[in-house]
Image (cartoon, rainbow, N blue to C red):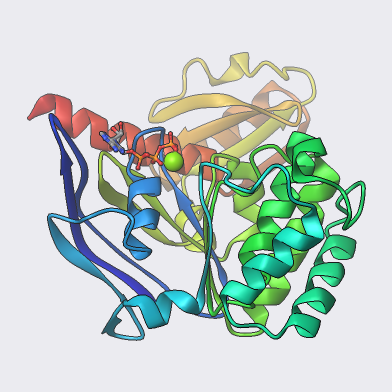
Length: 303
Ligand SMILES: Nc1ncnc2c1ncn2[C@@H]1O[C@H](COP(=O)(O)OP(=O)(O)OP(=O)(O)O)[C@@H](O)[C@H]1O
Ligand SMILES: [Mg+2]
């Protein structure tokens, strides 16, 4: 388990981390979310000693993280730093050797990663010749080449096409299943929603919400209702205790105050015509995110 404990980091005029705490269990892929400037990159960099914290600490298996632990960690930084003149193969082998992987094994792993990630141009392509998405795949390979116990990726999916997203997702999932701790940041919430078991949402240097995606998105108060004769939901006009939160698959998405309001919605729908759909549904992770971040901002504004 990787544990962020009360991290504080202040830059001149800016508190980037404000007592940030959360834990990432081993054996699953964990999503780290938050709006721009929330402190995700700063928190991730602190694992590798790249940020000097004012206070707080990051623990791995309940111990402080030092150089020996970091040798067993892998990091894909936000700024993508591979040497442009090297070939993909040489680069990966070089990084593996830094982590004391024997030469033959390093080459074997590098070739396997290039193939698995379908890096176009293959192992002999120069880094500088790669397209954005392909160089990002090479970055993923670079973070994985020494088979780290803890893998930290800063927006690994940001410039990938849907097919490469699937490849990288598959790799991270397999990797976590082998027992590794995998933490990544992302703004692609739809991807995160069906990929991660758990997430933490940061805002203004703090964690505002964390937990299992299935519990965070659970909702007893969200309905989708579709009446064939009135898909726009005009029949909802007189119903109290509800708010309309958009449309969904041809029906209306409605937040109800309580079960009584839900019953009233059903009665109004039945009067209005043929009820094609009346479902309790989950909130999307995007909705959970908006509410968590919006609510925290509201508190700040009111203070
Ligand atoms: N070296 C630095 N000097 C000054 N301020 C910094 C520095 N690094 C980060 N910050 C500030 O700290 C805050 C958190 O930044 P950070 O990069 O961690 O956010 P983030 O969550 O990764 O955002 P994004 O989603 O945009 O990548 C921001 O307000 C940022 O401007
Ligand atoms: Mg960042």
